[in-house]
Image 1 (tube, rainbow, N blue to C red):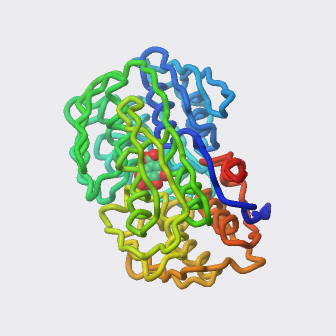
Image 2 (image 1 turned 60 degrees about the vertical axis):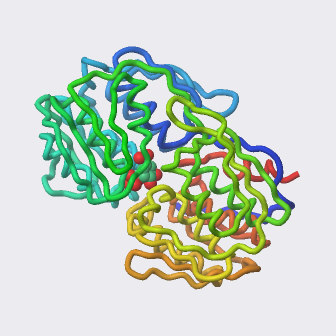
Length: 439
Ligand code: S3P
């Protein structure tokens, strides 16, 4: 059953300070690496969202001891005792990864080096997403997937202790693919290398050394040597730059706004959206404050920016903002001229076909947007007003739900959003957080 949620315009400018929840990518990795490790790890600041809960449920089903509780700030913290040298337990039931691509794809790498057979599945959206990008390299390392040659979930994976190392030239810039191969490679005898067409986020390479596994981490190249066992570690998860993009863009678009988002990962592989906003003439600045583990962290200042102008985004930069293209396309709708996002074909295989969804949603706003090959074009309209009475279909895609919600919040008209609850996948407190900035 589908729901409809009315999102009302903000009653005034956004001002003050906000702390966004923990980074989703880093949270998944903290949970999975702790489950793989020998000993008891401590994790803090972990995002409490449906996707991360899918990872927690998966590692529990595989025999990790999870003792994690909700904290007063809404995050999850506690201890995880991993399976270490013993390896994961044979689960009795299929593992349902819900909506979480990161859970299932990373898990495929985690399971590859062990003599167990695991059925993996997910919700309708995850069952539509391509898995061959992961099963192909893992199959060359020795893991087996059934039915053979099938590209989508459900799939059954059979691991092997005789896993071979691999040097892999990846056809896509995907951190999920890279991580799956590296996690399998940790247990293979020899060196496993992944080269990518453009650098994807490097949280795995930055976090594995804390678990005692040295990595080579260069733009477009990552490497591990095995066999090794991860050792328990302490991880503190910084705020999620992808979540920060929604309040930051809302502040850029909402007259008289000025906000500071604190304690966010400023990993260059994640804050491409800030550079695009700056190229559009937006008043957005980064203020580095230090490190959380090897992750650079800091604050993001964003202010109302009239006179936004179009820009062109290069294909090799897309990975650094891949989840932020929907909200950036909305900002481009308010900018003068034609903004071009080159090489965004990956958007077609996210939680929904985001390329089509962006174009459809912008057309509803009366903004012309189109794809040409793998590129997205948006013909901006400075002074755009959102028409009354619109209903957007989020397609149960969290980032679309938040993008169209921002349109309603800053555009002066109440909008209805189908299946708005999907924000629980990555940013359950989205509405409350944005409205807390309105005095
Ligand atoms: C992620 C990598 C990206 C991103 C996803 C999270 C990760 O996907 O879109 O939200 O945590 O590794 P791809 O690896 O498919 O680019």
